[in-house]
Length: 187
Image 1: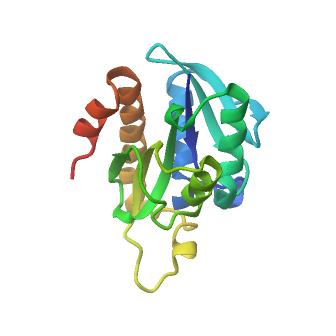
Image 2: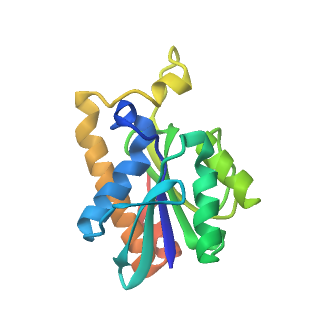
Protein backbone atom coordinates (compact mmCIF):
# COMPACT_ATOMS: atom_id res chain seq x y z
CA UNK A 1 0.00 0.00 0.00
CA UNK A 2 1.16 3.53 -0.80
CA UNK A 3 0.15 6.49 1.29
CA UNK A 4 -0.14 9.63 -0.86
CA UNK A 5 -0.24 12.80 1.24
CA UNK A 6 -1.04 16.26 -0.06
CA UNK A 7 -0.07 19.08 2.28
CA UNK A 8 -2.24 22.11 2.87
CA UNK A 9 -4.21 24.02 5.46
CA UNK A 10 -7.82 23.28 6.37
CA UNK A 11 -10.63 25.76 5.83
CA UNK A 12 -12.01 27.99 3.09
CA UNK A 13 -9.67 30.78 4.15
CA UNK A 14 -6.77 28.74 2.71
CA UNK A 15 -8.51 27.15 -0.28
CA UNK A 16 -6.68 27.64 -3.58
CA UNK A 17 -3.67 29.31 -1.97
CA UNK A 18 -0.10 28.49 -2.92
CA UNK A 19 0.34 26.54 0.32
CA UNK A 20 -2.61 24.25 -0.54
CA UNK A 21 -1.27 22.86 -3.80
CA UNK A 22 -0.91 19.43 -2.15
CA UNK A 23 -4.63 19.36 -1.39
CA UNK A 24 -5.47 20.27 -4.99
CA UNK A 25 -3.29 17.44 -6.33
CA UNK A 26 -5.00 14.94 -4.01
CA UNK A 27 -8.45 16.21 -5.04
CA UNK A 28 -7.66 15.73 -8.76
CA UNK A 29 -6.08 12.32 -8.14
CA UNK A 30 -9.17 11.24 -6.17
CA UNK A 31 -11.50 12.54 -8.88
CA UNK A 32 -9.58 10.90 -11.71
CA UNK A 33 -9.58 7.50 -9.97
CA UNK A 34 -13.05 7.70 -8.38
CA UNK A 35 -11.69 7.58 -4.84
CA UNK A 36 -14.14 9.18 -2.39
CA UNK A 37 -12.41 11.47 0.10
CA UNK A 38 -15.06 11.04 2.76
CA UNK A 39 -13.43 9.54 5.84
CA UNK A 40 -12.09 11.55 8.76
CA UNK A 41 -9.25 9.58 10.33
CA UNK A 42 -5.69 10.10 11.49
CA UNK A 43 -6.21 13.87 11.92
CA UNK A 44 -7.04 14.12 8.22
CA UNK A 45 -9.44 13.39 5.41
CA UNK A 46 -8.68 10.10 3.68
CA UNK A 47 -9.88 7.97 0.81
CA UNK A 48 -8.92 4.41 -0.14
CA UNK A 49 -8.68 3.09 -3.67
CA UNK A 50 -6.50 1.52 -6.32
CA UNK A 51 -4.27 3.30 -8.83
CA UNK A 52 -2.26 1.34 -11.39
CA UNK A 53 -3.02 -1.88 -9.53
CA UNK A 54 -1.57 -0.48 -6.28
CA UNK A 55 -3.70 0.00 -3.16
CA UNK A 56 -3.47 3.62 -2.10
CA UNK A 57 -4.62 5.79 0.75
CA UNK A 58 -5.01 9.43 -0.22
CA UNK A 59 -4.54 11.79 2.72
CA UNK A 60 -5.13 15.49 3.33
CA UNK A 61 -3.97 16.33 6.88
CA UNK A 62 -6.41 18.52 8.81
CA UNK A 63 -3.70 19.70 11.18
CA UNK A 64 -2.23 22.97 10.14
CA UNK A 65 0.74 22.73 7.80
CA UNK A 66 3.42 22.92 10.49
CA UNK A 67 1.87 19.87 12.27
CA UNK A 68 1.49 17.61 9.20
CA UNK A 69 3.81 15.01 10.70
CA UNK A 70 1.19 14.13 13.35
CA UNK A 71 -1.20 12.88 10.67
CA UNK A 72 1.54 11.08 8.72
CA UNK A 73 2.79 9.31 11.84
CA UNK A 74 -0.73 8.15 12.79
CA UNK A 75 -1.33 6.70 9.30
CA UNK A 76 2.00 4.86 9.24
CA UNK A 77 1.52 3.49 12.75
CA UNK A 78 -2.01 2.28 12.02
CA UNK A 79 -1.03 0.46 8.81
CA UNK A 80 2.38 -0.62 10.19
CA UNK A 81 4.15 1.01 7.24
CA UNK A 82 7.41 2.93 6.95
CA UNK A 83 8.64 6.14 5.35
CA UNK A 84 9.37 4.28 2.10
CA UNK A 85 5.61 3.74 1.68
CA UNK A 86 4.69 7.43 1.47
CA UNK A 87 4.57 10.05 -1.25
CA UNK A 88 4.23 13.66 -0.08
CA UNK A 89 3.11 16.52 -2.34
CA UNK A 90 3.76 20.12 -1.30
CA UNK A 91 4.47 23.66 -2.48
CA UNK A 92 7.96 25.04 -2.99
CA UNK A 93 8.30 28.81 -3.22
CA UNK A 94 11.95 28.60 -4.30
CA UNK A 95 10.92 26.88 -7.57
CA UNK A 96 9.36 28.65 -10.52
CA UNK A 97 5.60 28.58 -10.87
CA UNK A 98 4.43 25.22 -12.18
CA UNK A 99 7.80 23.44 -11.98
CA UNK A 100 7.87 19.90 -10.57
CA UNK A 101 10.69 18.11 -8.79
CA UNK A 102 10.59 14.51 -7.52
CA UNK A 103 13.01 13.67 -4.71
CA UNK A 104 13.49 10.55 -2.62
CA UNK A 105 15.20 12.31 0.30
CA UNK A 106 16.51 15.65 1.43
CA UNK A 107 16.15 18.49 3.87
CA UNK A 108 12.96 20.40 4.56
CA UNK A 109 14.28 23.37 2.59
CA UNK A 110 12.52 25.75 4.97
CA UNK A 111 9.10 24.11 4.51
CA UNK A 112 7.55 23.73 7.97
CA UNK A 113 5.21 20.88 6.96
CA UNK A 114 8.13 18.81 5.66
CA UNK A 115 10.23 19.77 8.70
CA UNK A 116 7.48 18.38 10.95
CA UNK A 117 7.16 15.17 8.92
CA UNK A 118 10.93 14.64 9.11
CA UNK A 119 10.75 15.20 12.86
CA UNK A 120 7.94 12.64 13.30
CA UNK A 121 9.59 10.06 11.03
CA UNK A 122 13.08 10.56 12.43
CA UNK A 123 14.48 10.65 8.89
CA UNK A 124 14.38 12.58 5.63
CA UNK A 125 14.34 9.59 3.24
CA UNK A 126 10.81 9.59 1.83
CA UNK A 127 9.44 10.31 -1.61
CA UNK A 128 8.25 13.84 -2.24
CA UNK A 129 6.93 15.87 -5.12
CA UNK A 130 7.68 19.57 -4.86
CA UNK A 131 5.44 21.83 -6.91
CA UNK A 132 6.84 25.27 -7.72
CA UNK A 133 4.70 28.22 -6.63
CA UNK A 134 7.40 30.92 -6.84
CA UNK A 135 9.41 32.87 -7.16
CA UNK A 136 8.72 34.74 -3.95
CA UNK A 137 8.80 38.51 -4.54
CA UNK A 138 11.61 40.21 -2.60
CA UNK A 139 9.24 42.59 -0.77
CA UNK A 140 6.80 39.88 0.48
CA UNK A 141 7.39 37.64 3.51
CA UNK A 142 7.31 33.89 2.78
CA UNK A 143 4.43 33.26 5.19
CA UNK A 144 2.30 35.86 3.39
CA UNK A 145 3.31 34.77 -0.11
CA UNK A 146 2.38 31.10 0.37
CA UNK A 147 -1.03 32.07 1.75
CA UNK A 148 -1.83 34.21 -1.31
CA UNK A 149 -4.12 32.92 -4.01
CA UNK A 150 -2.87 32.63 -7.57
CA UNK A 151 -3.66 35.60 -9.79
CA UNK A 152 -5.55 35.19 -13.06
CA UNK A 153 -2.41 34.92 -15.16
CA UNK A 154 -1.07 32.12 -12.93
CA UNK A 155 -4.21 29.97 -12.68
CA UNK A 156 -3.91 28.24 -16.07
CA UNK A 157 -0.26 27.40 -15.47
CA UNK A 158 -1.06 25.97 -12.02
CA UNK A 159 -4.01 23.97 -13.36
CA UNK A 160 -1.62 22.39 -15.88
CA UNK A 161 0.97 21.85 -13.13
CA UNK A 162 -1.54 20.05 -10.89
CA UNK A 163 -2.45 17.74 -13.76
CA UNK A 164 1.24 17.21 -14.54
CA UNK A 165 1.86 16.30 -10.88
CA UNK A 166 -1.01 13.77 -10.91
CA UNK A 167 0.49 12.24 -14.06
CA UNK A 168 3.85 11.98 -12.27
CA UNK A 169 2.25 10.18 -9.30
CA UNK A 170 0.58 7.73 -11.67
CA UNK A 171 3.94 7.20 -13.38
CA UNK A 172 5.60 6.48 -10.02
CA UNK A 173 2.97 3.84 -9.29
CA UNK A 174 3.06 2.32 -12.81
CA UNK A 175 6.70 2.55 -13.90
CA UNK A 176 8.58 3.28 -10.68
CA UNK A 177 10.35 6.21 -9.07
CA UNK A 178 13.44 6.24 -11.31
CA UNK A 179 11.35 6.27 -14.48
CA UNK A 180 9.22 9.12 -13.10
CA UNK A 181 12.29 11.11 -12.02
CA UNK A 182 13.87 10.73 -15.47
CA UNK A 183 10.68 11.86 -17.20
CA UNK A 184 9.32 14.55 -14.86
CA UNK A 185 12.43 16.18 -13.35
CA UNK A 186 13.05 18.34 -16.40
CA UNK A 187 13.73 22.03 -16.56
